[in-house]
View 1 (cartoon, rainbow, N blue to C red):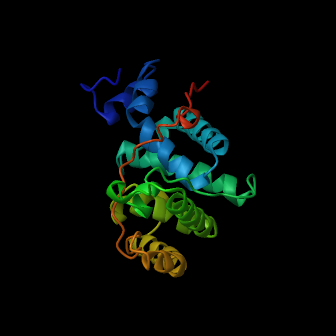
View 2 (view 1 turned 180 degrees about the vertical axis):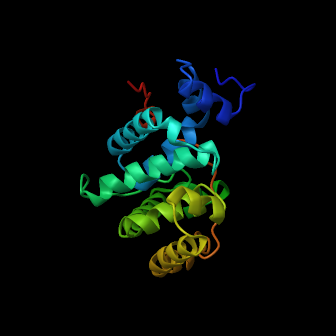
View 3 (view 1 turned 90 degrees about the vertical axis):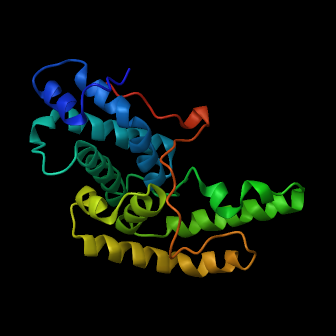
Length: 220
């Protein structure tokens, strides 16, 4: 149940006022995209689950701090991204390989999916190279690219999520793409990978793998 009759702001206000179900409804409404951002930023499902849990507990407890300067969903994304970046900065994870749910479609289209073992092995090798390249990005560049290029959020909204200027978001994206360009340029020689300078926005759809389903969050 998502209670479409009440806006995000209404649900958050109801939570602050003591409604025991309001925050759960709000989280359920945005759960998939918040999970996708956490997973793509951290790469490891367990770490992403922990970060999302930490973020939602923080949001649950600090809901009264939302003043309406940005949309509720933007505020929630900021809390999640900050939780993810904190885990990276504090070296709570050694390797952060992102696992974008649309990666296969970026490397090859369904119509041209390999049907023989050799082609499948080549596609797997390309996927691993892309993952390895993404893992080398600094946390701030990774977060910006996840939100802009993979989740498709506008630069201005991402700036609010990351609590920085729009120009900073643009710079982080440009630098991240530049670091990825040499590898992706090699892959484009095979005609399978789009230009990283103008990537298509990916829908915020979580993995269909049950083992990577977003965790339930029950703040105390």
